[in-house]
Every structure is written in C-alpha cells, then in structure tokens.
Amino acid sequence: MDAIAQFKENQKKLWSTFAPTEVFTCQPAARLAVFAQIKSGQRVLDIGCGTGVVALAAARMGARVSGLDLTPELIVRARENASIAGVEIDWHEGDAEALPFSDGEFDVVVSQFGHMFAPRPEVATREMLRVLKPGGTVAFTTWPPELFTGRMFALVGRYLPPPPGVSPPPQWGMPDTVRERLGSAVSDLVFDRGTLRAPYLSVQHVRVFMEQNVGPVMKLVQTLEPAKLADFRRDYDAMASQYFEPTENVLRQDYLLTRATKI
Ligand SMILES: C[S@@+](CC[C@H](N)C(=O)[O-])C[C@H]1O[C@@H](n2cnc3c(N)ncnc32)[C@H](O)[C@@H]1O
Image (tube, rainbow, N blue to C red; front, side, top):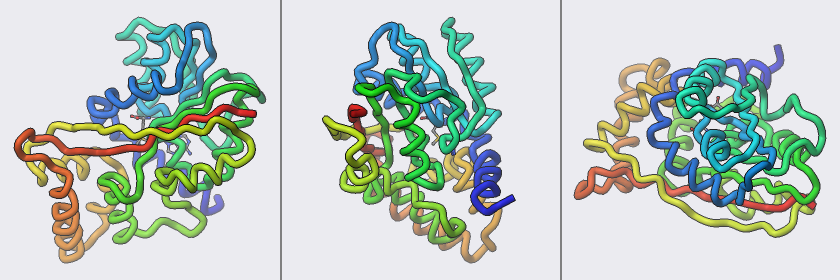
C-alpha cells in the first residue's frame, strides 16, 4: 500500500468516532445548503458527508441527494439519521479523490469540512468538478488557518506531523488558495463567513470533547509521551481560551463559505 492509501486507511479509523459532533455541525450544514442555493428536484452530492448533516438539509429542501464518506461508521449513522427524518438518500462509502459517479451527474456538489481532509487538493478539486454539470454549483465550508479550528489542526500537526505529500487541510480556508485551486474551471466565485457557536462548560471541556471524539486529536493523545502531552494541553487551552466566551459558555468557530459555478 502506498503512503497516500495508508494515510486514507488511517483517516477512516480516525474519523470513526466523529458522530457526536453532529450536534454542532448540523447548524452550519443548514447554512451551507441555503448558501449553495439548492432547489427542489436538483441532484446534489455531499462529499465527506459524515453523519449526513448537509445531505439531510438538502433532502429537506426537496433535492435528490447522494452522500459519500470514507468512514463506514459514519455512513451507518447517516443512514439512521435519514431514516429518523424520513428522507431517502443514496449513501456511498468512498473517497473524495475517486468519486464513483459519472461526469456531469450533479447539479450541485457540496462539502462541509469534508473534502478539505482529502490529502491532495488538486485531485479532490478535479473530482468535484468532474461530477458537476457545466453551469452547476460547487459550494463548501472550510476552516481558515488563522481561526480556532484551523489553528487546532495546525497545533495537532506540530506535535504529530502528517506524512509527506499530505496538504494541510486549513489551506482550503484561504480565499486566495481556493481561487487558485478552482482556477479557470469556475466563474462567479463568492466567499462568505459564518460562525459555529458551540456550547461548552469551560476551555478544558472543549479540549476533552475533542480528545474523546475528534480522531486527529484522539490519536495525538494516545501517541504523545506524558511531558509532550502536557505541553500540547497547555498550548491547546491557551489557544482555545481566545475563542471561548465565558459569559455565554460558547466556543466561537468561524468558517469560510465558498460558492462557484462550473463553466
Ligand atoms: C470534520 S468531518 C465532517 C463531517 C460532516 N461533513 C460534518 O460536517 O459533520 C470530516 C469528514 O471527512 C471524511 N473524509 C476524510 N477524508 C476523506 C476522503 N478522502 N474522502 C471522503 N471523505 C473523507 C471523514 O470521514 C469525515 O466524515
């Protein structure tokens, strides 16, 4: 198995415990579905769908939706969520870098904090645009590197560097980089900002939730020796305290929204 294939196998394990975070990611999911201007009857693909938070919002708007994710445990939960909501969604276990769909199948391709974790942006971008119809909409939500979640992934990367050939996910949160990656394949490129306001009891409560549910942070906690782990926790709490609003018990996680039309 080559290094990229091995990385994806590891990612599958890392994201397998992510389901409890759907209580936070469901809110920006509804925002992305609206921002993508999804219309009833359209064919929509949600890449890196996780437990289906964006896919369900799109289905509620009357779209015919497919959801794809690398991690089988999350697809199980996505099926349950669709069944609870009483909507039909076509779920796929698969890779953003090798989409199992024909050219031009979809009117809209969306991804919330999903395709940004594919290791090779140029491959993921090519695939997203390939399965989109000419004139179709691509829209996604990503974490900027200078804000809480982007800084969290950078901090994790400092203690546990990714293998060579894996692009840092928060680069997808930089408008200039997004513009360059989508290039001349799109027109009408639009950016917006949103804020996820997640309730927590304390800065330490934020960290423990991430350590218990968000794979890349969990892995680091399992791997670091005690002195390094103490350093990581100190750095994490100092960084998170800049985004925690104690008068509301809320962690502020700002994100970037991107929308464009395929030429
Ligand atoms: C931060 S979670 C976001 C999940 C969901 N979209 C949400 O907003 O709750 C990242 C997701 O990307 C998926 N993922 C990571 N690499 C992927 C890849 N190469 N192809 C497809 N999905 C991938 C993970 O399995 C995980 O579900």
